[in-house]
Length: 265
Image (cartoon, rainbow, N blue to C red; front, side):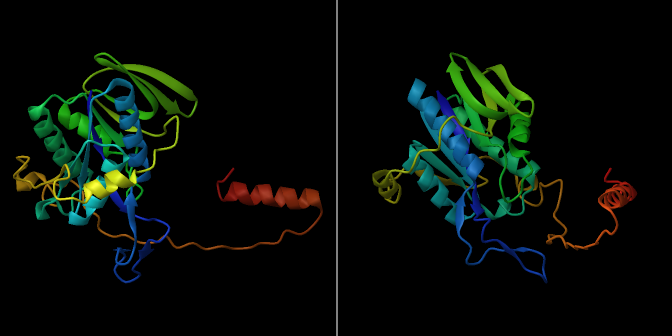
């Protein structure tokens, strides 16, 4: 089974700050990590490989330093890593990003058929949960979202979706795109010897640009984006304390009336 896993380098959100003047994220001096949901996706891919054999290819789109998450993915057990880095990719919204990732899958599939693409449910620096579904649309493949467990069954994939009212079992033909919400176990730890191997010149980590995947400039990055972020800011909060007087029954009645006035009830 040949599996492509999308992994993203994101800021460690426990340290993210917003510039009050510009409204943009302050990234300088902030540690970067592998997106948590993508780590779950990688573990899902590695578990499928453990059970059925095959190859796991980690793909990341970002600046040159995003190679760190590919090194980590390789240390966890991925067989190969591809970094998409090009000035033309800068400013991409989810539409342009999924198009670019789709072009990568197409190139990898031209080398050898790809059976499955796995994405995390969403990235913690955007929370859109759009990349997986849009990628499936670009490829024209079936998709299964909010997956908690998967099993390979020949040319099909059996998946269990985590839904608010319970799990849903789905049998999906391959190739397909899956977005992962959970895994049966915790993601494995990177192995030190493979992490050291990832730092060597002959490590199976490649860097591709727009020309390598045949992606025209007007369909990638800011030029290819259908949406643009106009402003980013921290929401302003205001708290007001009101003391209720009277008997407990009178206080309860006043509280209910106030909540109804504010259309909470």
